[in-house]
Image (cartoon, rainbow, N blue to C red; front, side, top):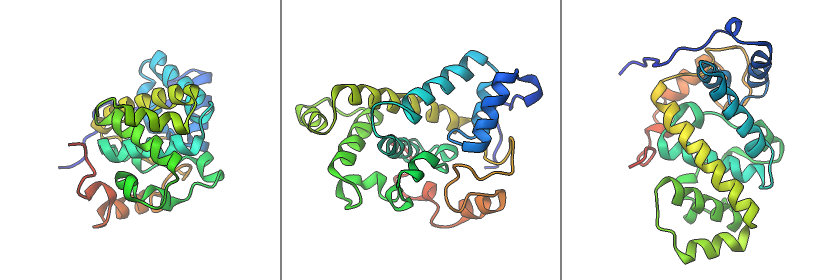
Length: 215
């Protein structure tokens, strides 16, 4: 079925100066990219509620940013939000998170790519997104690797990104449509409109793989 965008983008000229500055930050740094912010701009309170929360508990905060980034993309693979799943955190890249770390997210327990701390965080993301039971085993594992403030921040972040991605996937928005011309935070092979189209059409595209969607 052809893509049909469900909610329009607010044009930059309809935004105030502060919102336009945040849109420029999205264009320059990504995560989020400008398109999702341009949708939220229909309601400035929604725009800033997300932008401020994202800054405080994703880009900043008490828990390692790279672990939060792995959880973010785990959620993308789980809820099949292609818009979010085709982005990468530039901050996480700068801190050494390599592309290979994204490859086994849905099979993280069996993978040799992740540390025990990373696996515990992903188990937390799995339990939240798939509504698994709250077991002593899960919480013993989490408390071995994280402080309570880290668990609060990580849980709030997973909940925030799960809710946003579950919504954004329904909107059929796409990259390179608002403030185009930059590749900030795009995954390899998605940096331009032409590369994005080719990557999404390829047989090995992640969203086509079995188990990519929630079930």
